[in-house]
Image (cartoon, rainbow, N blue to C red; front, side, top):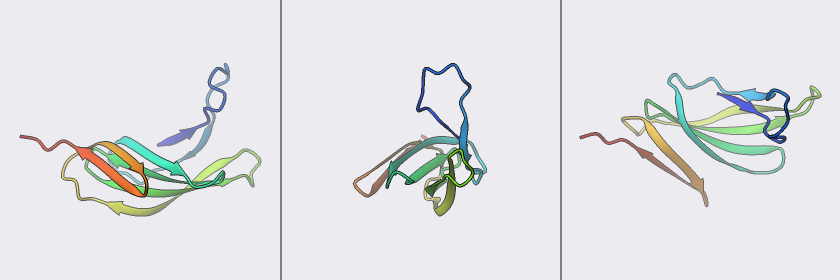
Length: 101
C-alpha cells in the first residue's frame, strides 16, 4: 500500500509518494484511522484473508520532502474471511466481514 499526497487535488502534477506499507500477504480491502497530532496517526488496515493490522504513522521531514514511516503495532486475525469494512472512532474498532452461507 502506498500513501499519496492529495493536498493539491487539482494540480496537473503526478501524485507524490509519501510512504508505503508492505506487511500484508493479501490485498488490503479497507482502512481507517485517526490523526493523533500533526506528525502522527494511527491506521488500521484489513485484508482479504481477514487480517487486521494496526500501524503507528510518524511524519519524517529529515530528508527534505515529508515521508510517513509506518510501524506495525498489532495484528488481529479473528475474522475467518475478508474484511469488508473498518471503522475507528472513540477508541473502538468496528469491522465487518462476509459470513457466507
